[in-house]
Length: 625
Image 1 (cartoon, rainbow, N blue to C red):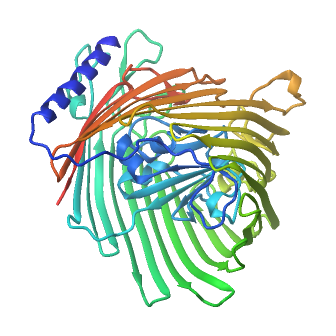
Image 2: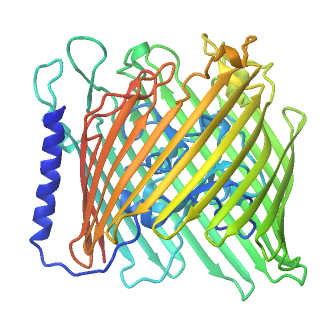
Image 3: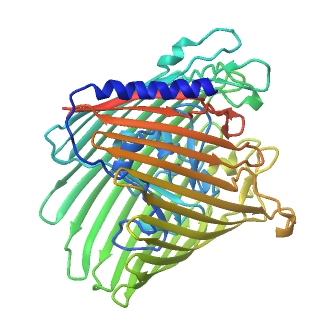
């Protein structure tokens, strides 16, 4: 382990030395390389929600491999993964797993009634402009809440450019290790390749690309010899087109489109044995078209009509049992209005119809019609130093024949120019998915709707050099859906979470910046007659998470060293991960980087039974022309 870490560091320094010998152009000071932990997102109507924003500059600085890794950089968030590149990756927010969180793409819900989860690996990093992570309340989306939290991924828009084309490329390498054949796996030095071509100009941005990965990393399963992953490869391609144009002075049209296809081996979990002959194919498509009219009247500032259609198909070949195919359709029509009520008031209303239709070999044909309406606003008092932010939503779901409400209220108090207090409380419901209700032998048609109450109070302050943010949060979930020993979903009595997020950002010098954060999340499983004094924790919830990162930028160079401590759970051991990243502007047109993931070669799992990769070295860059 130590030899591999030293080798990685030597390689990093060697690449830097090679870059330094080139003729370089000074491009000035780089962007500040930090994840912005702000209590508010940049929305016209504030909400007092706890929101983290990951900007385009920060996305470029981290050189992360996947969207889930970027989401995991923010305090209070992490992700689950079932293996290497291309594997299923889902977000966890303050201990709430994927089915309790909502994932949006450009403000359109991607979470499906089929299983309630979204695989973040289907969204390539190259198309992302920024990511907003809402950890409590409605956030900038305004029209709904979630029992857990929400992630809104905003894609890039076309802008005029003298170099409209860009080519990004990367090669990933696992250092060869001895496994059961007692030989080195030298092919691991070219384990994965990723390439993307993007054109952006005059309102149009188009991206096409793909990746190939063998995921040929070794792992330890408790036996005397190491094992090499088999049938874990992935072949993926994607394309995206965004276009916006002014139809007239007051009318704007926008279309946003994405397609992703993955063909991957599915090695399964160690507890069930590696299924070497199985494989999986995933297809995802999404199109959203928006027409926005501004200055409609003196009272109505803007009105926007949005049409969306999404289709997903998962095909799974099981060599021991029957194959399965899941076709998922989602269509929605939304009308959103922003009202002009004066400088001290803001109001946005929304009317939405959504159809979820699933045709599955396992759960059959099911559909869910959802009609919802919402209103959220802001009231500012005392020259804006104090504000109140209410939000309410009511939805009717056809298959459950039920009305589902959610609501929130928040407040912000500016104590000084640089210090704010914020507080919010929100209520949300989560209806069971088709898979939870109807999956053969493991579905439970008697499941009830989950009901969650979230509350938090926080403070943020800065003096220009030091920025501090602290939040105390609580979450109470009734009818919490959890899986029993036979993998059948059940409504436990309820669960309770109490925790705090603490974040400090320190600008050491003009060139050095450090950020440290700590999440304490104490959970209580109050099922089966348990009480708080019994101290039974919810499974798979990490009580302690620590993240820290040191950033460096000077002239042509940018670099970071980040570390993360993941506390143990009932089924997962603790893990300590260290990553290195360095980039350099080689010429006006070429920016290159080298990254070392999991420098210490830590053996760990994010999902029980699925070993994660060891040390990986990635070398890549971007050429603009």
